[in-house]
Amino acid sequence: MNQGKIYTAVGLMSGTSLDGIDAALIKTNGEDFVEFGPSLTIPYEDAFKNKLRRILGPAGRAAPGADDVERFLTILHADAVKILLSRANLDAQDIDVVGFHGHTVHHDPKNRITVQLGQGSLLADWLGIPVVSDFRSRDVNSGGEGAPLVPIFHAALLKSAPEIQLPAAVLNIGGVSNITWVGSGGGAGEDALLAFDTGPGNAPLNDWVRAHTDVDMDKDGALAAKGRVHEDVVEKALSHAYFDRKPPKSLDRQEFCRDCVEGLSLEDGAATITSFIAKSAARAAAHFPAPVHTWIVTGGGRLNPVMMQMLRDTTGADVRSADGVGWDGDAMEAQAFAYLAVRSERWLPITFPATTGVGEPMSGGTLSRPT
Image (cartoon, rainbow, N blue to C red):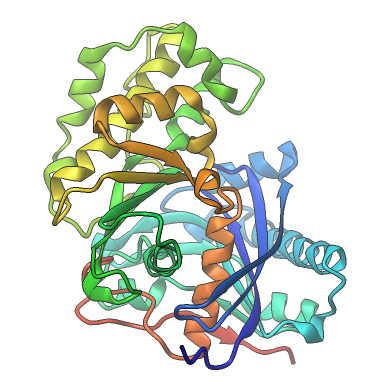
């Protein structure tokens, strides 16, 4: 195998669940070689998290205070990279490129709008490292959904995991849930891929818990485990036209279940939302080109045993956590943006007709070099 140039890259992700910043280092050729390095998570402090939450929505960068939030968000990402490099005993000159996703505050591909806060040029100057940012805009401006972006990375990982029988599915349960179906052809080619947002992820569950307690999440599914699933509420939520729409398709974090459990107890609301997340993900299988035996779950949802059991019950499949197959479930999205940054540097496509609905395989991202 001719690996070509191997890049050392850092990826950064600020997820829609508002947990904080994930940073990860990998070595890759942007194709079929991926070697994992160290990673870390820097949680957001509550004060900043609240400021960020207040500017979510259609106003985007025009929201009051958005400029200050964007600048501080960029500073926090710079700090995360510096801490990661320090722990890895590396300097800026050891890194070829940084993939900086930023934080999505509004995503409306129907109207060709996607807004991620974060200043790539400022980050490049502070770090002294080239930065690729704004990964979604080119795809959205060309008629694609702009999401999900990680399927080509999932395919590369599955190609190097011969113990996993293909076709297989990789389900990421972050703020929004998305899935990648990888066909038995293996490889990291677009002909082997299908990807789309399946429905809500942790965002509505976290919002529900936060609205009724002084914590941000249903840790270990403890609340859901004590509650009763209101099946009528779940079925009504699943009647949304989105779930029958053919992929590729994508969602904004605000799309579902903001009010669907109002009036329920804290525990019943948590159980009902958790069931909705699991069942909406399971319905994705109806769109797979061929059935899969194995689902690999990444993102924060994999740490919720109630959600994982609900997935097993509803899919009837072998549902494993990413960590169980040797991947880092906390770092995967950050690793993916490091990988995508290298592909962007090489002008390789990062989105495809079967992942975002764009008309042809397309590269993306904006490269900022330090001044």
